[in-house]
View (cartoon, rainbow, N blue to C red):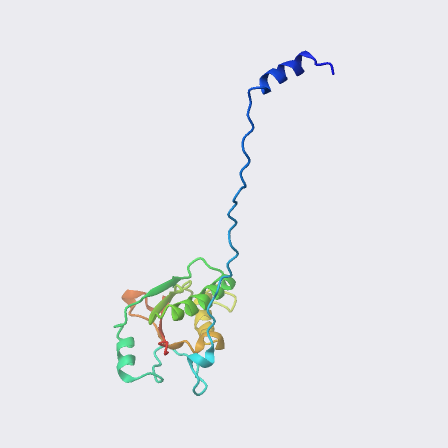
Length: 175
């Protein structure tokens, strides 16, 4: 076998090289963990008569002391969701998830900031823009999916946001 100058140089260079020992590579692969999301069974939350629709200030289905404290704003707001800048579709998902998560976290009083919408004159026609989320959120709170989690809704005092904020009293989890 005839070696060229390059081959001879290569042979000369590689004579003093020792191969690296091969160690098995322990590659840690992330374990595939299933994300467990707790489900809320409406039958376990509330199994009484059919609940009537929520109305602002209506506290007929809760005891007098709790109702008085809620109306007076004595419950501390434990979480809030600000919907400014959201579209109707994305706000819907946010509201549903917010209420469910607040209930699962055993929060008692939360609020949703819808904003007051655009101020419009009374002579404006049907197609004038107005506070869409301000109208829709109370409707969503009455959906069977989350209605059983909610005891009452109300607006806070004007200094705390008034009609642009919805205070929500959530049902307590009973074991």
